[in-house]
Picture 1 (spheres, rainbow, N blue to C red):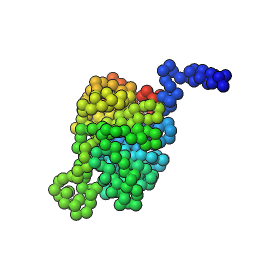
Picture 2: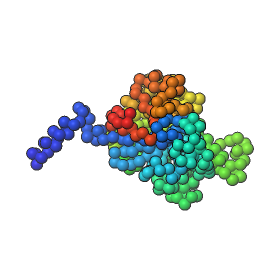
Picture 3: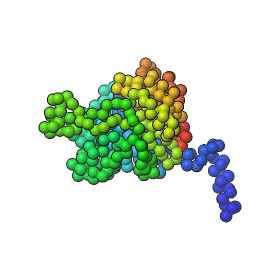
Picture 4: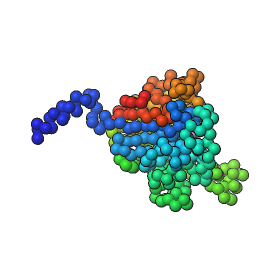
Length: 323
Ligand SMILES: [Zn+2]
């Protein structure tokens, strides 16, 4: 046996960089599903994470995923929703990819009272994994539409749960999380609309994902600067890849987001997100944009999520292809 094992070990040693195990050399693929192919556009939030084992996770479907029939989706095992606002859960969506322009996406297809998220979960038989007090809301929607309410799964702050070999935990996000009356409907929805109040579904969240190649990713969700980004996201989980919202006013802007990256989390790689602008043209970052300001201010390499362009990350958080 020794004679066969030694050459295999030697061959592995020859192709792996020093200190990188075979598992770490496997890649997690991240594919943005944005408004316009090859661009980073105003309402883009959605990312698909594919573990080396094939598990596919859709983060914040929002409005740029063109409903459950969007041909870019493929197999989806898990949907994540950072919080219940319409631009994340999806109160409306594009009729097809590339509807409208990068600056003015055409999101004329309504998905109330269900949410784009629920419609996709029903079509794919996927789980919706959320923290806070959002799971009962999604369970009710699944049940009301003939789905299995058990496919809405709780991961509240604290424990990490495994889904298809990927560990998922939630972390606090400093943001509001009111459920809009348009998702409630009926007399109650009308009365809440008239009163100008939203339903309570707990706090907004971010996510920690631990992939089978060892990669730990932090998805910030909509948030201001939080102490947890230092103590929990870096200190406990050691996040190596960060998806950072930079939209300003509603979340950290590019300058605050760069502080989070440079001083609190110190990751290996960063993906800009939620810029609320036409950030690119021809796949190139436009001057004067929030995205450009963030790239210049961040000490870690910032990757721009161009719709349909897959980025691959090894177990240490380094982008090894598509970047
Ligand atoms: Zn938002």
